[in-house]
Length: 582
Image (cartoon, rainbow, N blue to C red; front, side, top):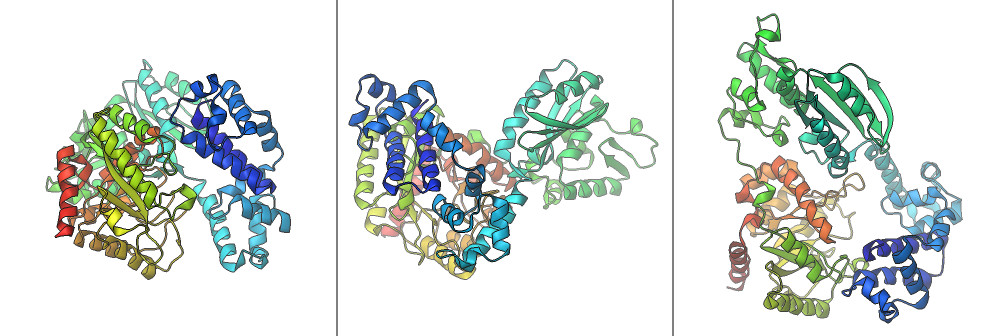
């Protein structure tokens, strides 16, 4: 096991021990051990090989033995036995927002609740509101979390669905019977989460293709299989549908099964206005008896051109005005991942990240980025090991030294993700914040404030001289937690007025600010930075999800500050600082 995998095991052990009500010091030992491992700058293999692991602060003899066992064997009897000793229902309750291990233990001890079903019944009977430390408000929040869990369970994050979708598409394209193939549906439109997957294939020999499709690994059941259509359901609950059409119908079917209902209705109406009939089968004159007499298409662009439209990228086919824009030839050149020159809002082991400053810089360099920005949490985020003034000053010096060493070609910007406190003030001293290259101001607490109070809180933070960017506007976690209530329009206007960027948080669970808000915001002059909010080198890959949302939000290179080269970004950040010091 790697040090990160071992750290994950130690964190889970701490959670499981808390569910069992073990000694707090024992629980803390495993949490601290995980943190110590994540902060290691030396190679774990070397430390173990030289018997120096016990020299690492926070790692006692018993913990060292467990880490060595995990590292060498990939398993730990203590961990396995601990998992078996705890009811699966208690572990599943951790999925309910606001329910930590300590509260679950209290519910189990007081009301003998051992499953989400029992938890729901207790909410309905008002038993949780009567418990000390809970109350009616907590009970309502738990009940809402259970309802959301059921609804969310029918959806799948785009990021996770792609792990199923891409191998299937690659496999289809490799089949000799397949002439062309593509994703379709909401997955191709890059919606943040999807209900199912759609695949369209062009072929004159569908039989072998259908057989291959229903024989995929991880299929739980085949719900339908015909000559040209099949539906399967995977172990995760994700459904996938395959349609095989004659090659001449491929692009019409692809367009039809990609567009939203509203987009397709508008396209069919536009066709009718021109005496044409548009469907998944093709495009033909209304009076024609069959699509054999229709217009051929060698690409989707041909379909749009036949209706006097410029090409509409799949991401924009939502029925939100794209047809009118395409009629005037004004569909913009949307931002692409290759346009990104660097990223901001990322974390290291200094707070709750899982890689050191040097490791993250090496990863950014591997991506070919000209720069990246470190923005570890501030002290109010104690649960994330946030930095106080002294530790942040030390990090500023570490960043400076790393840049001066020229060990990496990628430049590191020094920043912080500073907590916006409940009253709208920032968590760290203004003079220190102004020494940083940039500041991401974010909310991490008091999510239940009324909408007017939360809106005023964010606007006050935006008006703070040190704020460069506003982080994850609503604090939502997709399919897990709704965002806090805020008047996004007022916040956007305040950001524009104060020359503050609102980030597009690319973490697949956040994708915040929502794509539905970006077009109008960008039209008014709002800039964004597409930030992965990376807590490990592999999280830099989240940028792809952020690009999806940016494109759905009609964003171009001009709307995204981190498409600027290093020189341009330095000038932009310095201009903000110099303007404020005047």
